[in-house]
Length: 130
Image 1 (cartoon, helix red, strand yellow):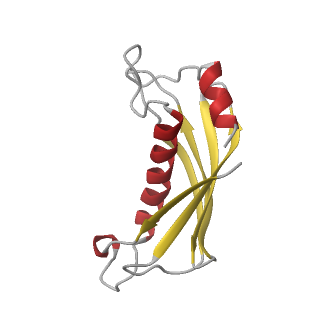
Image 2 (cartoon, rainbow, N blue to C red):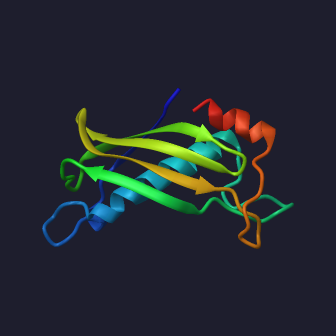
């Protein structure tokens, strides 16, 4: 199953050429991940027990087409692998059915000290369903 996140490109996301700066596309992926975690009721910044988070430890991205202000964007997220403390996400960013960017992001569940911590079985089941 894939998770679909939609948004409109804001003018503030563009560079001097009037197209979305490449780094902003990765922010769209992060927004999609945060929206998904909220839907699954998995805390973004940890819970009362550990106060941790989900930092990115690896990103790979290929870019295919530009985006401009007011374009409607779809971000599709799929959990490729859910490990003991990490999640590998595949993503595809589309506009009008055309590939804009594709790639992967690896996030690691960490505690307040920034050390990897095990993803609970309940969360693992939820994340594997995406």
